[in-house]
Amino acid sequence: MTLSTSDRARLQAFLENTRENTESYLGYPVSKDFEFDDLVEFLRYPLNNLGDPFSDSTWRVDSRGFERDVITFFAEMLRAPENDWWGYVTNGGTEGNLYGLYLARELLPKGIVYYSQDTHYSVAKNLHFLGMRHIMIRSQKNGEIDYDDLRETLRARRDIPPIIFANIGTTMTEARDDLKKINNILDEMAFSQRYIHSDAALCGGMAPFMDPRPAFDFADGADSISISGHKFFGSPIPCGIVLARKCNVDRIARSISYIGNLDTTITGSRNGFTPLVLWHTIKSLGVEGLAARVQHSLDTASYAETQMRHAGISAWRNANAITVVFPQVAESVKQKWQLATANGESHVICMPNVTRAQIDELIEDMLATASE
Figure 1 (cartoon, one colour):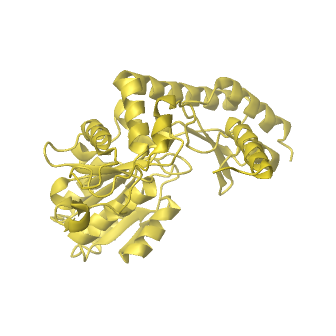
Figure 2 (cartoon, helix red, strand yellow; figure 1 turned 135 degrees about the vertical axis):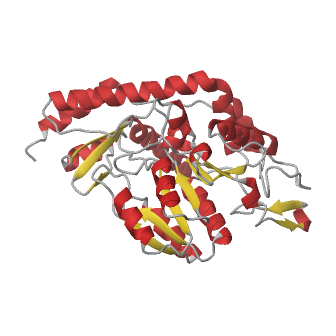
Figure 3 (cartoon, one colour; figure 1 turned 60 degrees about the horizontal axis):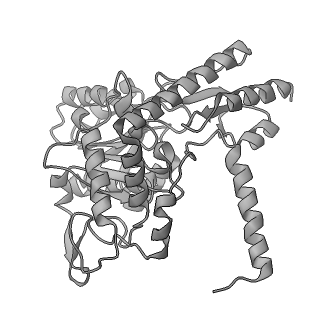
């Protein structure tokens, strides 16, 4: 297989453009400080983790063993119930959310999904795919769900099982819904049947290392949790993790004879390379390295908020958030730093690779274009 000279030139130009664009983004939650030279040789093989990661298959060109290690690590980190958890490595947070909602639908087919107005846009799409009834709940100013509105909305539908879609880090402000408060409301309403899914795309990898620890995982009442792998952890390929209570997953599993495995995931064929990426990160950093990674991001976010305020910029962030929010910037600044902007606000997300020098330069650009 040989490319023509013009095709090689096109690839080279794309590579240079990619390097340049990767240096300057601050507005999206994607880590870029990774190095996977140890894994390059595996790109020569068609790694495919088809089927259930905890069941053997007649197909053996897979990384199932590494995937199980990854899921086991996250099960412990997210305080999953002993001997009652299951999960797999997904293509990203949206698939994980789809899986959690799918489980909820199968368990509570008459249920209604409640989610806040700050929920990620993909959730409405997932609900449409699944044909699930749903009601949007107001958000507070910081992006967190309005618990009073949730309580009153539930009160009017006490005969219908609730399915709560909780945000553990909203897109624009990194607000986190509190599962303890939500469960208290459900207890108050005497709901015996309920399901709670945590969309912890960004914060799921950070929250276990925070003090105080946000109420978001299985010990706090979650029935399933979705986390993105390419955000806090970092990956050249989008990926994620979904975890759920095994007793619920067992109710939807079915055997597929020709692969000699169970059909328990959303997709049939699944990426066999990304479990190696996540495994490599977990093994090379360890718990202490991940905790230090979280603290670095928090320190950078604190620095960004403080410096912006000193410069006269109305910056703010939620407690223990690495997302700093400020008034919408000029178009030139938005384009240079690839800043996500919505409803008159922009933000910077202080991922582990973000430096104070970048923050300083961003502030200089904001001040220089303040009149635009």
